[in-house]
Image 1 (cartoon, rainbow, N blue to C red):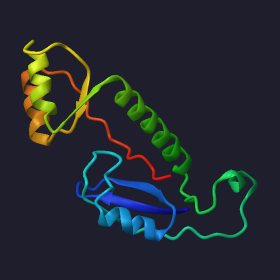
Image 2: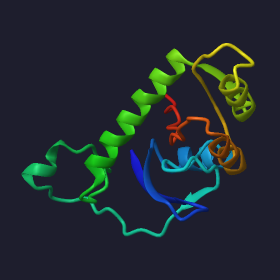
Image 3: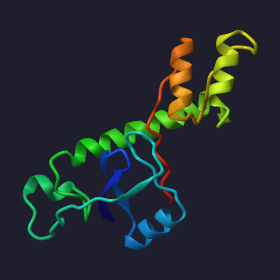
Image 4: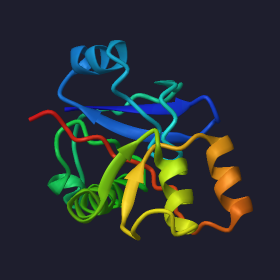
Length: 148
């Protein structure tokens, strides 16, 4: 495993784990990466200090090989796990409407279609429009499924 510090066009920084550097390159080339905070697809490697391997303390012995030594790495891993579980629950209980999310949410809000749980993509303009109309919604950083 290899850990990279990544950042998006909005300046959010986050870590991501890859099988190897070739896997990062493959996912990047295919535009499969997105910001863990805002979901932006414009992601690149951030400048970071290398993680050095060597003697580990007793507390570090449980960390997987290549795991970043950053003090918040375990918190980040736990958060990513929670976001993956949230994604699973949303996909299990809601209808995917893709880039029609704003239009479908407005139809539901105004009673034009039956009320149901939906999820999909929305631009910043869509989100502003929904907020102005009083539609309740949440923007969730979408964690991509890991290739296994």
